[in-house]
Every structure is written in structure tokens, then in C-alpha cells.
Image 1 (cartoon, rainbow, N blue to C red):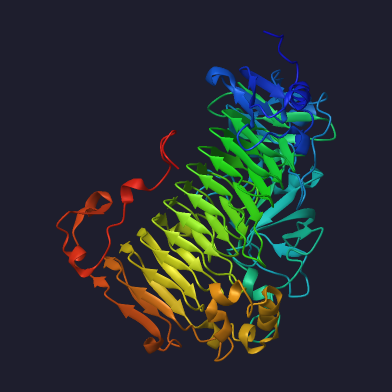
Image 2 (image 1 turned 60 degrees about the vertical axis):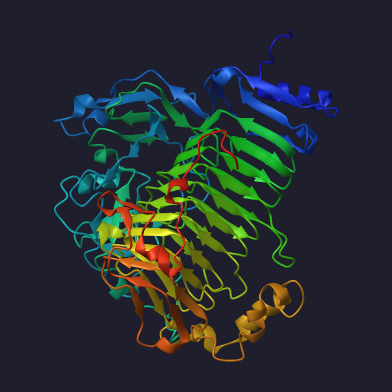
Length: 640
């Protein structure tokens, strides 16, 4: 047996010369591989359909591809001037480490690669902030006031913070907030503090671009919208005041941390700004049984190519997104765990919008959870754009915003569990279709479960399935919904909601006619809609045959939510089953065969077992049994 290669790059280059139609496996022995630059694979590094190139952990040994630097030498704070900035009650608990050997710590910014972060015991630590996440308000304070509508760079803060006057000595303080709406967060730098007038003054406007009111076209009054909104302050040394918090002095290259419950074993600072692995036009490559972690950017980037498979792997503790797929065909993420990412779990943008040729990409049998640490909104477990992407047998859970954001055509969302989503945001959904594109349709949401999606504090608007802003042509069938707001149709057409179970939902289904009221400007001017239709040549194949309803879209007022069907659903418990907004004519909504109120024959609703017994009375009405036992990730080795 030949001696092992010293680096991944050497093994990759050797495989190029050996690849003559045979399957090749490059085994990685257990251990940590510190990467100071992205590991890149191109067209010349791929295999063939029947003979892929595999990178695999040897005999299931633990293999880590790491984009960070391990930190092992911690001590008490050496500089008395720095130590004096901590409260005497806990000053001795703070530890410091020298980062002089780390070449690039990055910077905090509103976009781009994340700065270096600290991870210990395989978990992300909290950048020093006020208020603390452990506080009664769960890490937020409120905007007390706005000096005036023309002062968009300042807010009035609530007084009484003892250490606030010490913030001035910090050079790089930032504020994250839901500055106007509870569905959009933003990060802005703190420039100065006017202590006399209790003002926090930003280096830029808190909101750069006002959203226009869709009915009047006038800018929304920021002064009226912002008072009472949530925010917190980050990167303040004096606010390093509880276990698990840290601060990096980039000028002095010093790390300060109050160790959490896991201590400081296995401490890493993320350093790599680019992805850990990047595929550029590569095809027929498999990565199996590997952990990708501790980078400042994305974990894995796949651009173009065909049949890249990432399987049985863990992608975690990153500043960016776990996996990004752009273009290409038939790539797959299977039996993976994605967690601890600063942004989303995965993004997939592929397929041909004009020809409706599907991308064929799949994310299957994976658990994507506790993501969107640094950007709290619009960084979902999976962001899907394009044509023909499949998400099947996954679990999407525990996140501040959506589970799946979707745009495009003919996607399949099946056998997934959506749970504990939209935890700190409003006006979003467990599954959220972006809307405002009348040619995006053909998606099927089937055989999924949606539960415990309740919005901020369990009280705000967070539908399990949200077809927002005229999203149309979506089928929502054979799903289980419980303890959530069920399906919201936001003014769209040709949506089908049938054969679903809604238990303890408030409401189960809602439908509005926003194109007739507050969003009428979106449809009164029909030129944007005509432009969308022209761009895909809706009157020619394949659109004419695949979506014939587009031929009739402008024959009558598109603001009227026509051709929606709500049939053969079970409604059990909850408040309000089918809620139609006042502007919606009930006669245009098809509603047949729905079971309302009494127990349809659940096996044991008291323990959330909403499967049907063999003699369930609802089965006699034509309702089809939902295979709830098959929802979620399947064991490894199960059939696709």
C-alpha cells in the first residue's frame, strides 16, 4: 500500500491522473484538517455516471474539514486597564487568548463574509451584547422614540443602563434590530451616543430604502412604524457579562471570553472567508461521512456540473450558508445535518424557467435546524428558486424565520416535518412562497407535517403554509397541521387545498382578496404582469400546455382570487376553520366535502397522533389516509 498523501490537494491531483473510467475512492483518516484556503474541485476532478470519485471517511472515522484556527492557551486578563472594564463581581471569570497568529479576523459588516467567531465544544458562542439572551425580554430592548421623520440615523433609547456611558470607548459597535417591521431585520453601525438626549446615532440610516405602500404609492411613515420595535447592541467589551459571551479586539488581536458550561475545550476561531469546499463545473463526485465546520463563509458551494452528492455529513458552525447550489443538474444532499449556520441551511437556484426543464436537485433525509444565527430573516433552512427541485423526507426546525422559501415552478415538497419555525418573526411562514410572479406555479406541497409554528411569543401571524402576494397554482394536499395557523392564501389564484388534517389551528385556512384592497396597485397596472407573461412566452409551448390558466389571466380582474379549491379537509378543534376576508365573494371559492368539528377517527389526538384508525368514519367520505408514519428523515439505507 502506498504511503498516504499529506494534503487533500495532493490526493485530488493524483486522482486526476488515475481517472480512466474506474471508480476512485479517496479515504480520509480520522482527524482535523485545517484548511487555510478553499478546497476546489473542477471539471478535471470528476468521475463518470457509473464511476464517481468519492471522498470518504475511512471506516467511519471522524473527519473534520475545518476553516478555523484552534485556540488552546487561555489565561486571566493580563492588561489591568482591560480588566478594569469588567464588573468586579465577575472580572476573575473572564479569560483571554492571543490571536496574533490568526492572519485574518475579518470585520463585522452588513453584508459579505461573517467576521471571525468563537466556537467551543462544537457550539457557537455569543458575541458580547446587550440585552443578554438570558434576560426576561429574551435579548431585546425597544425603541423608545424617534426624534423626527427626517432623522433616520438616530433613535431614542430607554435610560438606566449603568454601563452605557462606557460604550463610547468601543471602536466597532453594531446594532441589530427589526427597525420597522417584525419580518425584516437589519444590522447598522453605531457611530456615536448623545447621552444628554438619549440618542443612539448610526453611521447610516437605519433603513436605507423605504417600502412604498402598495395602494397609495406613498412612503410608509417611519416615525410611526419604528417606535416600540426591537433591537439589541453587539460587540461591546463591557457587555461581556455572562457565561458563553466573547469579544474580539481586532486591533490588539486578543480574544476575551467568559467560558460557558462546556468550558474552553475544543475552542476554535473561524478564519476562512471563502467556502470550505467549492465545486466548479465538476460532476460525479461524492463526499461521504465528513464534517465541514468553522468557516466564516459558506460550507459547500456547487456551481454547474452534474450529480454531486454530499451524504452522511455534518455541515455546521459557519458564518454563511451550509450548502449553495447554482445551476447544474441532479445534485443531492442526503442524510446530512446542517446546523449552527450564520445564514441559511441551503440555497438551490437551478432549472430552466423558459423551457421548464427541471434541475433535478434533491435535498433528502436531512435535519436542518438552529440556523440563521447572524441574519434572522429570509435565511431559511432551504431557499429554492428555479424549476424542478425536490425536498423530501427532511426535518426543518427551530429557527427565527421560515423553513422553506420558494420561488419558481414545479417543485416537490414532500414527507418533510416543519416545526418550531418563525420563532422571533412575523408575517412569514413555515413554508413560504414569495409571490408577485404570476408565472411561478406547479409546486406540490404533499405528505408533510407542520406543527408548533406560532410566531413571536406564539401570538403573531406565522402561517404554516403562506402563499403570499398572489402566489398561484400551488397544490397543498395530504398534509398534517396542528398547533399552528394553517394555510394562508394571499390573494392568489388556482390554489388547491385538499385532503389535509387541521387540528387546533387558528385559523385553519384563510383567503384574502388583497388585489381588491390594500395591494390593488400591484394588479391595476397590468404592464408588469404582461411583462412576466412575455418573458416566458406563456402563449407558446411548454407554458400554453402546462399552465393554460395563464392564457385567461388578464381576461378578468386579476385581483379577484378566482379558482381556489378547498375540498375534503378535516377541521378539528381550533378557532375558525375557513376564514374568507370580507372582500372575497364566497361563491368563487370551491368548498366541498370538508369534515368539520367532531372526531374523524384519530388514533390518539391527545398525544398528537393524528393518524386514522382503520374504521375512522371520515374514510367513508372519500378522505384519503395520510401516511404520517413516513414523514421525516428515513434511516440510512432506506429506498429513495
